[in-house]
Image (cartoon, rainbow, N blue to C red; front, side):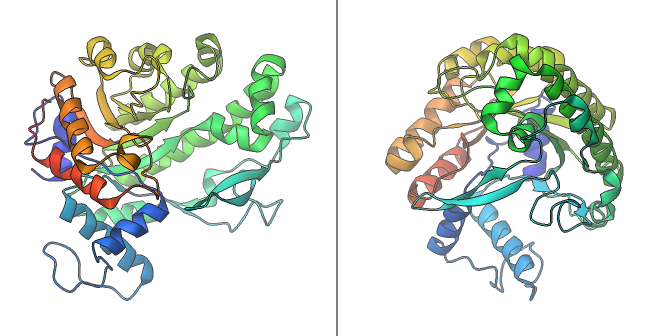
Length: 372
């Protein structure tokens, strides 16, 4: 089977030749594994991959594809539109949402963190509505059509996305955003209404530009932390559930599967995500979090949704041995033997992770038949 055939087999509740795999990693680890395996993107001999191109971006994409094929990774291919602007019209240092960012160094790498947001000082819903929100007309969707016109069908195609509260937290400030759900609900509702209007039309144009070649879309919101929910089920249902369902319904109207991401101890929300939103894949399965034990998920939801992730990247992958990683893959496959499972790290692989551990994860998965 090709990677696309494996993904679609599980999405359509059919068996695959082996457990499908995916890859999520920080840029620092990704550079580390490419260097360790001697992959540069300038290799002249590799079957079924386009010839070397002089562009650095094309060489990087080629290096990625060589890595995926060498390790048997069934990673989806992402496509998207081109933003025609350089910055927010009202702030040349801000992104499309008006957020400024700062780079945070944590020793073995760095990440971008929200620095300032345009809604932080606002006090009324009318001010929120008057903000210059992104417009689908600011995007060129033709690169999607062009990219998929030349696609060889080897990998599943993922496009579009929706994660509004994360954006609101950046625009408003994290602490204030959570307080608003209880103290200033009108502010949250005004912002989420504007975001949904943008994302619905934005994703509709993305799906339309795909012309039937987009297989999966990404709907997300972190609903929980390491030890429990970030807010109550009632809060989720008030602010997020209906919009998520409508976005998923839009995808389904184009025949597109729905992949859902939430970190942490999200068990209380899973029934709503399956029954109301209609998600088909649940990621990332942080099974060390309360309520997210693999056995519990397999028992309660294994017949309803596919699981994606589940190989621990907080303890096993960074600090275990290759043998312990391989054992966790086999153990997870056994627990999910009556379920559909995509083997992947339960979030981005961190820079401290030994390359040998990651190779062990994929080599072990490749040896196991998919229970789907």
